Image (cartoon, rainbow, N blue to C red; front, side, top):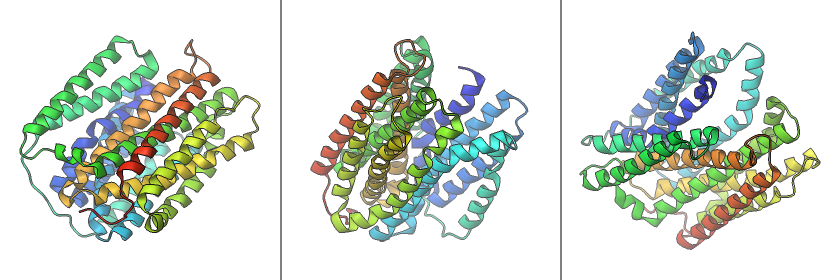
Length: 413
């Protein structure tokens, strides 16, 4: 892998590898404290990225950024759970939490492209400094989170990081080097072995960072499965359409990014509507119907060709945006309501680790299919195969959610 690729992938690798450990940190140290640590580290790492004198220093700073982001994500969700005791208010707050990702998806590529073409790439990282400062100032005004000290689950931490890092590395490199590359196969073997080691460690430890009994609860397992599939379908679909715009329609990176801005606006609006629909109809239909809408969107990609009007492609993005935005706040709120307070960080870390893995896996696998048999160019048949696979997975988890989730929106804790 080239140095430039590692600038991107080092962040992804650390984000995925440390997510479970960061969730446990949030439970033990307190969500507010962990969130503050993560934001402070991310801000400092952004400054280091902006000041990096060479590619090696930039990659190292990106590693720190990824680790910091892994702390921020589960801690932020745990902080929402702590702040809002009422399930309805919590569901609405979680919807606002999801809006951040929608705004980033729409504004990030465009703003990043403009900054790179204008002041330069260092400005992309400097932009994080005032944002981090404002967040830390606001965080100082929030109530402290309770600490829940517990014995260090060292073997669980080590095996979790090894499993997630091995899987993330295999997924990243598999897309670049091919799935039979020795380093890819070795990373997959490490992930499997470490995964078994993690399960064994959690069974034996008296204070495991991920209590395995939590994974026997259907109100926990179903949101986790839905989260994995939703992210795989959404980011896989976005990646495929990005390739379609650039490789088949000849758009630049910024032009392709602009195509997703309306989608981000739709997602933001629907995110905020989802809790109200769940209050009226229940979370089960909102989650299931959202996935089915996304499945229809995937199938709607099948007729796309080199001459399809761009306005029609944009119209096809609407159901993808609406379906995902309906489901995400609902299944996230369901998970947060289904675990006790002392396990919120672990549950959040597990959910986001699975979501990150699902998105990365879809991008790698579908990217390989869309590249065609020779690994170059763009294959419409590969894109269509990927879209059908996404639709099948979405339909399957929609049935699972409808079958196993209750219609009630009340907290189960």
